[in-house]
Length: 332
Image (tube, rainbow, N blue to C red; front, side, top):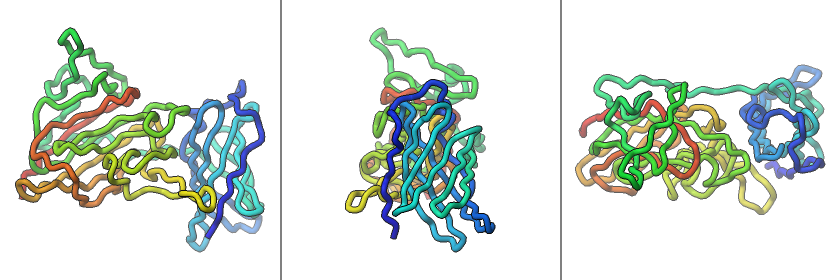
């Protein structure tokens, strides 16, 4: 078992002039550590912006024998680059950022090379199948399926639309005009904003409310921690996704946990939800895929409301949605 100690990079906690753009540095990196003799270990690195030129760094190293080693560290802007360090026992990982990647050295002296990659959900842009109802069209003004909360004047605010089909969550949220009951498949696409200095529930918060009243949380959980069921993909306040990653911080302290299925803010993500009602009055069960990864498997929900609409929460964060559709399945 590895006991990981965090090494603090010794530079001022400021965003230096000329430092790389934080949104460009944050993200998922893939590559390897390779020795002079040709032995290679695969690396997956998450770099998570914390604001003011600071980052968390999470490393997953797959050794030649298949064993997984998890390491965490920190990085900070230094001049026109970003440098990271992480300590494992008496040895140290180290690297610097340039041209969309990090290069440096692993604890054994191997050469570290990782490049930033953008994974894409396999269901991104999925078209509504025959029999499905498009709940959020590219231009919601041309559809009568989704409604917004009315202002004091009794009128709904204008939709704010984006060129890529995104729709900004309106003040007060949005809800379907019709109610649903029984089984269905729901497809949702969402994009969290880049809010590096925010944490936990303030970091890109929204949510998808199902007809029974339960919420599938929407949050920037690429590398940020929150409470049970409060992270992206969580069934709010009572179940985390099955894809939670645990990283040891210090011996005797709880591990740091985040959702491995989550993509960085600024990238479109997907929920594909299969909601089953086995018989009238029964609590529904859900299977949920986030970006193609199964995060809940035939899990029984607590809410038992037999009929209701879909609602999408406004929590004060500029979250975007698009391409939301539902396919009623009928009860069997």
